[in-house]
Image (cartoon, rainbow, N blue to C red; front, side, top):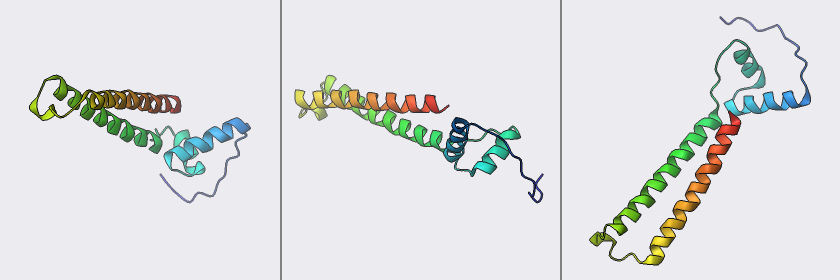
Length: 114
């Protein structure tokens, strides 16, 4: 139910609470007033940052899948992998390790935001 919004509520908050509220509103892409109005009425507000992090994780997962596929190809002695040398394989392994580190960092950010 929406009508003309001509009433204002004054809510005393600490500096830390103010920063938290502003950050969370920014994470959802909403102005502070609308964020507080929705949250105070029990709405679950979706964070746009969470969606961005999920997209990053999906990309990382795809990268790991491709790197793992190359490694399987090499280990199976497939003719298509005949030109791959040990240096290339170790490069793929290093890429997997780096990607796992990136994925871990992204997951930590998602968890600490929640």
